[in-house]
Every structure is written in structure tokens, then in C-alpha cells.
Length: 461
Ligand SMILES: *Cc1c(COP(=O)(O)O)cnc(C)c1O
Image (cartoon, rainbow, N blue to C red; front, side, top):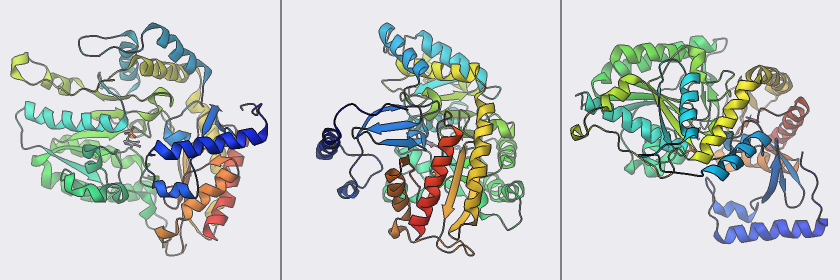
């Protein structure tokens, strides 16, 4: 916990407000209707430690959503900070074309060792959306290189999210982010998500997800000749309201993709690095995708970096004399940035030296116990959980699961309530969720759940 600020309270409050006002003169914020800041200005954060953010007014906020799912071991984690500082004194960055450096090499070695078996090649980019672009382009280009140019389309699940750049947006399916840009986007094939929120009463997750594989099988059979790849978020559709499904679906998908000759892209940008209980979500299905996209937690929440892991078959299809023009010429200026790689190595070192996944099981069980009573709330349709992700879905009418009118912005009421009580919760629509850093304590979980519970009462009033 950070110490309380030294300056007089009046001064701190004024400074907080001054920064917010300066911000609004020039900064255009992501995923924000800037008009909303007329009633709720942005909160300037002065410093952070562990799960706590502190503003200039000395107020503290428990970061229950890991700063957009990036942070794993708390803010200003001493070992990661030291690794970045050390690296900054040696080499901050060098282009990764024609040159290399030890952090990039070591990180590729480590990721290939930890990833599902068979993934032996690591292509770097600098954010999640860029990793998705890389995987889409590589999959398309692979089929060009092996003489199957008709295989150029992508198949995705409803309610999926893969990022905001045009290619990533096209293969995603969250209407709010996508609809206005539709004229600019690739034409993709979409099949229903195995999202278990829609399962019948008494039906198991496995049974429902297996039943929902039928439309996927049909689409693969119908379109195999024109499909380059299927893209999925294994187990949890995070931006799609934290909807979850069973690993059985992924096993069926891997088998069907092989049978129909279609590549499989696993987007573990949000679910990777322990969020679902295993280091990678694909492990729970015992599958290896053709492309594994990683970012967010990769650097422990310190620096932007992403990686696409793939196998020898894909790599070999690009490997030839220059004059064949088969090379993958995609690049980003900051590809494989040395500071970001150092942060990632320090993060993975914590997994290697501490029983992180085991500790998380205890924390996840505590979270489950504390949140369970919320299932009885008259406006809660479901409490669902996958490892360190727990979501609570609020609805207008519980028996019919009729959602609230989005214009009522009830999630925003909860957001404001929680901030007032020292917790950063950022509901997606009417779904409030916890995805805390792994260093959260049981007491902090209690605070987080209690504030969410009173927030749900306020939001549903
Ligand atoms: C966040 C996210 C992305 C996009 O990553 P950015 O770094 O925000 O571009 C892609 N896929 C999933 C599943 C994500 O959660």
C-alpha cells in the first residue's frame, strides 16, 4: 500500500483538479465518449503499488481489473521495475531486422518452451491488435505460398473480440465497436458462440458447448475450400461481457480444423498467463493452435509487447530464396523492444520461481465463495467464473433474463459507486467482473466483492 501523500490536503485536491482540467484540454481518451467527462473527469494517478492506485488527492483505488487485464503481479513490482531499469542502462532498443539482442532471444526461447508443444517460432509485434494482424496475414499468406490461393477468408465466433485495427475489428464481433466501420471491413464468416450463458436449465457447460459445435462443423464443411483460418478466444470472450465456454469445444475445433485443412488461431491476449487457471487456456483442452497470440500480461502490465507463436510447417512455407518473394515482410518499428522483452522475462521468472498458479487456485476459490451469494440477487442472472476471472451479469428481469435498456447506463452507476468506495470496477455494459492482479489478498478480495455487491444494489435500484 502506498503511504498517504505528504502535502496538505487542500493543495492535493487542487492539484488533482488542475491535472484533470489540463488533461481535458488536449488528451483524447481511448474507448471514451469525451462528453462523459463533463460529469466525471478523468482521475490523475500519481503512483501505484501492488493492487493499489493512488491519486494526487491521496485517494486510493483497488485495481480490480488489472488496468485493462494487463497487470499480473501488481503495480511497480520491484523485480520487474529493476529488470526494466537494468535493461535501460544497457540497451533500450535496436531494430530487430538484421540485428538481435539477448532479451528477444531469451524470451522467444522461454515462450516456445512454455507454450503448447509444437510452437517453435516466435514473431514479435508491439500490441495485441498487431499480433492479430500478424496471425491473419501469416495464415492468408501461408495458403498463398503453398499454392492454395482460394483460401483467404476467416471464420469467427459471435460475441468475439480481437482488437481495434481494421483486420482485428473485422474478425471480432462486438457490434458497439464495429458497426460504424463495417464498410471498411473484411467479409468474415460468423458462427454462434458456444457461450454457456445460453445453455438450457440443468445443461452442463460441456454438453452445451459440444451441442454448439454443430454450426461450426457445418460452416467448416461448407467453406473449407475458401477458409484460411478460424480465430477464437479460448474459454473466455473477455470483451464480449466475460462470456465463458467449455474446453470440449476447443478439442472438437482442433480436430475439425485438421480434418478440413483450416488453420486455427488462438487469441490468448487476455486469457494467457494464468488468468483461466492454467498458464495458457489451450492447455485445458490439450490442444496446440497453429498460431498463439499473446500480449497484455506478457510484460506483467509494464510495456506494450506482443508475440505470435507458430510451428515449423508455417515457418517452412515462408523459408526460401529471396527471389521467390515468399518472405513475411510485416514489421513494426518497435518490434521486440528490449525494455519490453526484459519486463516479460522478469514476469515469466516470477512464474518460474513462485507457485503462482497454485496460489491463484486458493484466491479464485475465495473469490468464488465470497461472490456466490450474489447469484440470489433479484437482478443478477448469473455469477460465472473461470480461474481468476469472475463475472456477474445484471438484468432487468431475472426469470426471463431480459437485459436493462443500455441507455440507462447502469454499469456506469456501479463504476461511479465503486470509485467512491475505493475500488476500480469497470463493468462491460451490465456485467461487472473481477480480473485482479495475482497479488491481491483475501481481505482485498472481500473489499472488492463487498463494494461490487453494494454497487449492484445502487445500479439496479
Ligand atoms: C485486448 C485484446 C486484444 C487487443 O489487444 P490491444 O493490445 O488492446 O490491441 C485482442 N484480443 C483480445 C482477446 C483482447 O482482450
